[in-house]
Length: 113
Length: 111
Image (cartoon, rainbow over all chains, first blue to last red; front, side, top):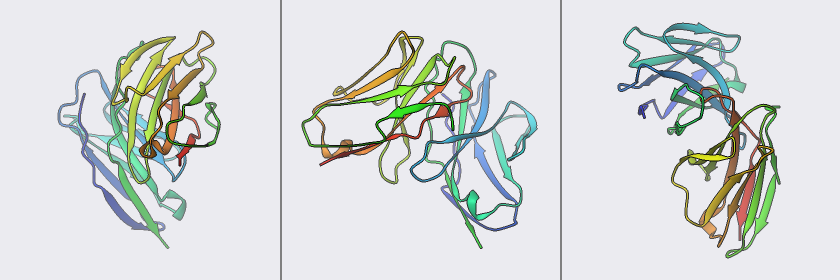
């Protein structure tokens, strides 16, 4: 299983762009990078997933360099409601579900007025 | 709404007791995962089932067990409860591993 490392906490202000970087040095060829968001007392929510280069959806962008040993979640123009814990996971995509989906400690993002 | 249903939402019980948490996955999802999250702690992976079979196990205590039934709903059984078992228990489901849909959790309080 690829181990991930991300900052424990980050602070930002409303309207700013926030970039959270995750390192996953031993990512394997079949692995994807997935990010989740969790608010207090709620289950995590899928944000975005990517394999290489750049992926963008209505919520965020995910940048993955060519060596895939790290990835950066980019949240444009954050608001107070983006205050949450963000988890980076490396998962292997295949049917049957043999992979233990291990969540790390996550990054606690605090957005200030 | 993720489509994953967990019941009950809250459970208060005493030490030494046994409880059962229930999870109904999204329609069509064959995989069910259970996680434990204690206060200010991360998500601890407990166990995963796929189409009725156990497929992966995390740091699940021997006092805990789970199963997935033919209709794909799953139950997590916690026995000989201790104060330290108080936590939020989440169930998640997926078609494949790459995207999990989480339920709203069961808050267990052991007094």
